[in-house]
Length: 425
Image (cartoon, rainbow, N blue to C red; front, side, top):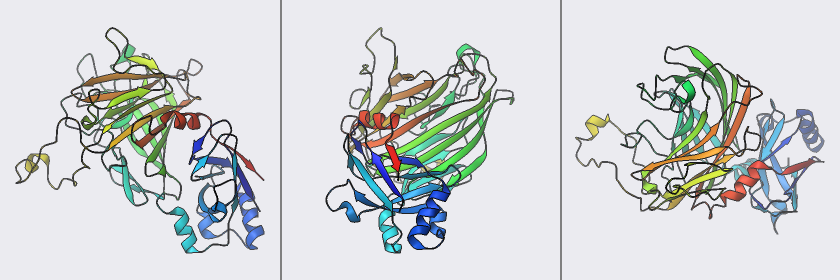
């Protein structure tokens, strides 16, 4: 019988994402030993059921968990539900004596479906919409909406007067043409913000749904204002939920090569919705304790391992439009977008840095706020050892209920920086 022992180490953890290297031979051998037959079709496609055998709460001996196996990477990933206190461990075994009801119960509420459309990818978790990754219609791909537990988006859409070229959440490049870098940040071509380039969607290497996570692997080429390529990136996006109140997107960028002048900043940016009402109502906090907005005369930029924006979400988003905006405004009953802070439940979104990134903790913040808007930015630069590539950087996005303190963002950052150790026996 194959057993997996998850060790908390020095951290208190809550439903952590656990990944363990495991060869297919190990997995098949364990299943064959239990069943006397070959690995089943369902397990071959990625789903493996685990049974907790020790270390959980009373009554957990019969609790089942679903794991997802990636044969290409040789990795088994699962979510031990509940708490895992510092210094403790929990033990799981592959469970083969189950039926369809057991599988359904173990996967309920967290199965991630990834649906590819012509211009976007849609992430649904437990049948609920979570996020759209839009790859057409802009200078760069972006996430919008990203729905918090209240049902409203924790990133803003288009059409606002404050920085209208900043939509949702995504990776930009070049900033305001820093040092002559190509600008894939704003939608303005005139100086000092241009001329601008774009990130060209070339296709998806992988669009994967699964019982634990969904994943998209995206090929992108960066081009300048003349359409000449100057960089290639492979972007991997993984979506998973620890619970309905703790939702995650992990994004890794593998820059294969880049040939551009200037400082070459890669900027992961989030625009918070106007309903948050930052800073009068909502708030921006960070792991360094740096005040946001910064005091008069102090820089907006600071280094921190995480930054979080939260506030009242207002009402859930309206139904999808059924006509172009210029027609909708003439329809009876049309209501323009509401202004000012929302009145709904408090939700937030946190941006977590990873220790493997060059310069960790990276420059974060660069808060720009007016009329209730706020921008959160994490900046990555090519390493001195590989200024033209290849190099990689990654970040985790944590969408949560409540503010940063209530959602324990600091603990989620610590778990991201130092994952659980898993013993295979």
